[in-house]
Amino acid sequence: METTPIKVGVIADLTGPLSFVGVANANVARMVVADLNADGGLLGRRLELCLEDSATDDDVAAVKARKLVEVDQVDVLLGGIYSSTRQAIKGPAVDEGKTLYIYPEQYEGQESDPLIFCTGPVPAQQVDPFIPWLMRETGARAFYLPSADYIWPHVLNARVREVVTANGGAIVGEEYFPLDHTDYRATVEKIASSGADAVFNTIVPPGVTPFFEQLHDSGFRARGGQLICTYFDENFLNMVPAAHVEGLYGCLDYYQSAADPFSRKLLARYDELYPGDAKFTGGSACSGLYRGLRLWAAAVTEAGSLTQEDVIAALDHAQIAEGPGGPAAMVPGQHHARLNMYISQARGGRFEIVENLGSIDPQEALVDAQDVAGVQR
Image (cartoon, rainbow, N blue to C red):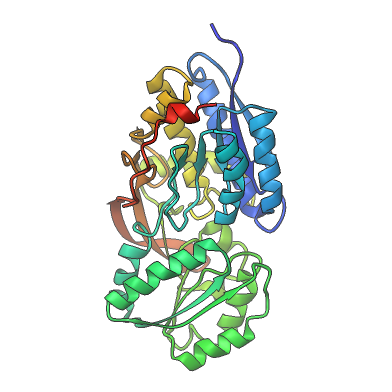
């Protein structure tokens, strides 16, 4: 019997501006790998977690991806928050290293590669059901889009514009800023003068905290404006005073207030194992990392081997009956997952689910069905 361990590579932002979520991602990886090993591992072999710190730096992420593939020779690689980080990992790990890569974060969609599977929500699961609901419920019609200047905000905003206008609204402003930009006073003034009654935010850390503070101080919410941020979760709530995001709406695959028994049990176990500020959340990729590891394990078990072609064929239709927020299943051919989705609102420093949207398909394009045996390491 094979005794060498199966190597699972995980890249997490353990330091840098996203460390408050990267630490949580690392905790999830440790927890799931330990659980799988406690159940006998996979294929009779123990799993070995190879964890690397990408330091919230895309260049570092690329170096660590290369190490995991070339030196550690991992069987699968997971991780990355920013879409730019996914792309940095993709070069050495997928394009050159021909290694199976699972990206766990909610993102703009459109990633399509035989070796990449995505386990977080995409615009068809967030923007498409959420924006029409918000416009019906709140009457918001004029949207302002303050944004970080990288791929996710640009692509997501294009989808927001499409959905808002299709539902009788208008985009009254759209701006992009470097990730480390912190002075948003001019933008806040533009938001006020534009007549915007909804701000759809894609500014990310470290800039998001000063932006929310400056927007709050301007009286935007007090005037009845709606604040929207689809990635915001309980980890991000820890970054800002509760008053600055009171009433903020989001839409994710999991919130800590999810009432299904498995989600409650999973959260209680995580909190017991890893008490502190690094929470198990949805927008921070914890939920996607959990299901990514579980879906991969299910695929390896079905395949009965680690032969990449066989694992990919099984992962293409893998599903888990229980997961954070509910069951999940890869949609055959799309390399993205069907997920339960929830609309929530920040109230008193916590998120309360205000609408359970049920199970929603990602509606991503079919991945080019090239012979994956040809890309096998």
